[in-house]
Image (tube, rainbow, N blue to C red; front, side):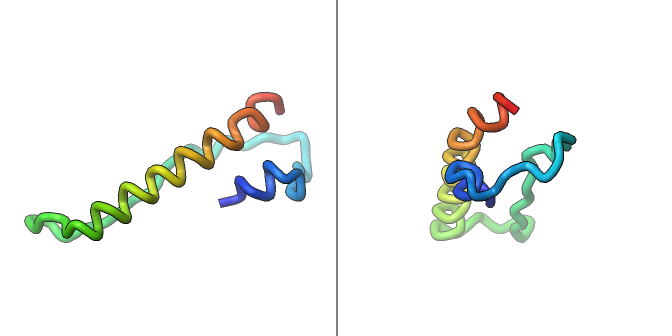
Amino acid sequence: MVSRPLVDCTLVPASPLRVRMGKHFHLLAARGKPLRDIVVAIRDWLLDQMRQDMERVAPLIDRA
């Protein structure tokens, strides 16, 4: 993630060209087996971290 450098303004645009990349990721698990509690906890933590990152950089992206 580049949210911290964006927020700190240590990462700046190299060009006025903007490319939308989307917000996609994939978590893989075995079919037919329930997720273990630790896997669910890690998944939920990752989702929360991504949400926080998006909230942090949204004002920077929206004003560009």
